[in-house]
Image (cartoon, rainbow, N blue to C red; front, top):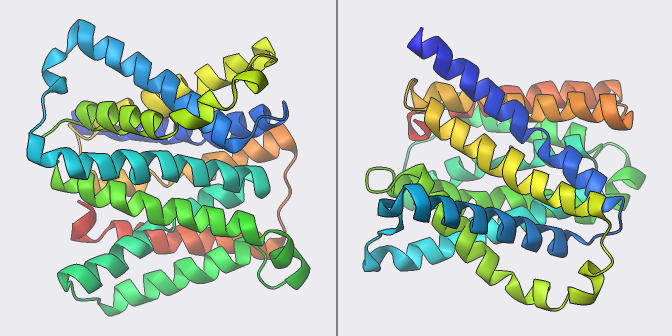
Length: 293
């Protein structure tokens, strides 16, 4: 029962993550720019978790001084730049395309592990990477030059969001035995918010005319798919193996696609549907590798 509870919680967290692109797309309807939206989202989430930590879990403020450089990289690149490029991908492409592009990060983790840590690539790994790459190519409609040319910056942003997340992945894995997920969120979001604070300072006049609906969307993005989703996932990993949890997390792009179809009427060509299946199959096979455990 405990393991089943863990799996159900992971699926719930992944579905919640899948709403991030939906809320982001709705926010863009109010003409807010991705940098301003992400800067405000990180400010809201960091203030929330700092207050909660101060009130209930002050021990999570404590980190070793020698770990600050890596935490700085985690906050600036693994959090701020990753979220920024992801929301640019949402703005420039579609919710589904951005989610699938982001979920190529196991490919880059595998490549980095091979180049930096000399981990051997098996035939299964190579086939999984090929399946994911081919799937992504179909999702972004690489077979249609006009579509590929139109979405080139959005595709690049989606792939960059995946690459930046690799920094978060390796740093979080390195700190797993030293710090809780709560601490990593605390420092990641706070440092990320500080890194993007000049954007907020330069957007005061823009924010002064934000409608209440947009402010509500900013808070929903900060609290619901961001903090709640991540904390639920971290809680669930206490009850299941993280490798299996990672596999179940592919419910995120699937739920993003379902929400996008239901809310925005997004349509898919048959080759794109095949692409989603191939990409997620490759990702599941890569998640099953020990380094994702």
